Image (cartoon, rainbow over all chains, first blue to last red; front, top):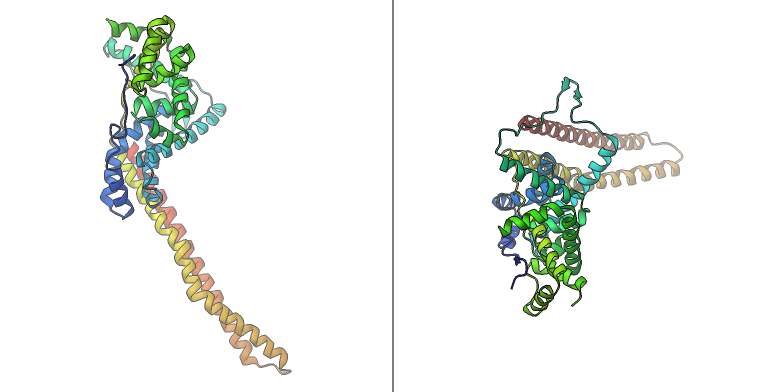
Length: 215
Length: 168
């Protein structure tokens, strides 16, 4: 039975199998284990961080910082907890730190996109990519994605993180609970509240999406 | 089942978390409640929009920059044991002990000087030599620490420069 097309999630589906062995090798000083960790998780952690902070440069910095911490704190990683949870927790905490920093900066600096950026080497104009040549469909998709991301951005960090871990990263409730260090009941509650808030913010798009699926 | 309960179960059902009995009760409620039916469709659509957001990946230079950062982290890790453990160990092994011995000798020398009415210059001279030796050891350690700080700073600056270049 599926009321709305349910998506069962599991740790195996989330691709965390075999982490114990990698962590053991990592803790034993096996350099190749670190490469495997990076190869396995760089896209997932980057995508999560990007959706959390929405700026590519900051997302790369944070993702790299996560792996630097893996490298430096390898021996401190507990084998009785999920390695993936640990990675997402570090990433999430760094995102929240970054968000706080950005809020402080925004309060101090407010500038127009049209306003030239004054640097030591002269004045720089902000470049906005011209997408006029791209197909209309791409534009619409880009617009929709932008609207969804705007709505996500307006959610409180706790709700956004739970929703992204679930709907984007495919983590199950238990994994999310470990990442956020909260009970499973709290995860359910945050997901429900996040979806209810998003539903209202994306009312037009939700209806459009529902109609297009029915066509 | 009331509508509030149904709304929460809809969210869990989206994630495939309901058992058969709960799912059956929810289905029964949705069939008899059009508002909850609409809510189920809207929440499903919302969740779908989020899950269909494009997956983003890092840039091509991601791993290269990460390697630079690891090099710095490694350098700092090497410096830390030198600055903390090794220095402390060395300090304890070949400085603290001689210093303690020297202090005892100096105190003993002063004691002897006080006890003896006539000064014994050789004893003072010996203590003075020991104090100078201790000072020299301090200076040597300061110099080593300073060199390590300089090296760490230079490495950090070089890595930052390379990172900037790679980003350009």
